[in-house]
Length: 99
Image 1 (tube, one colour):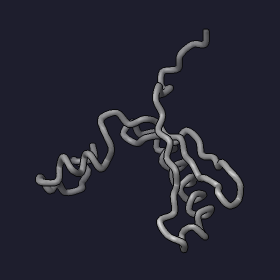
Image 2 (cartoon, rainbow, N blue to C red):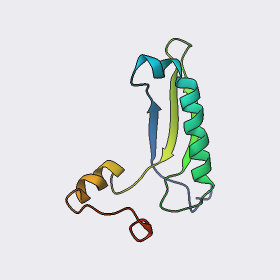
Image 3 (spheres, rainbow, N blue to C red):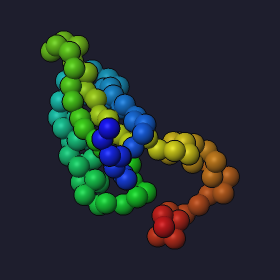
Image 4 (cartoon, rainbow, N blue to C red):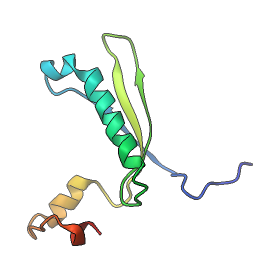
């Protein structure tokens, strides 16, 4: 039996980068590469409040290639859930809110 790591997540989220239109479909590879780069930069922040990216990969052939990321699972809901919960409160984005 392998020892369990402290920071090893039990659950993962799979994010697929899906282009919303034909223009972005032509640029999907560069969009995906930029997303992976941003995720790597966020990982280097070592902030417990930022979901870590575990890996990025592609699947399928050139016509039906899928661009995917595996992220840590975020307990407590999505960012969209948080916005909906706070929508009537109109919070201002500031350091106090982020901390």
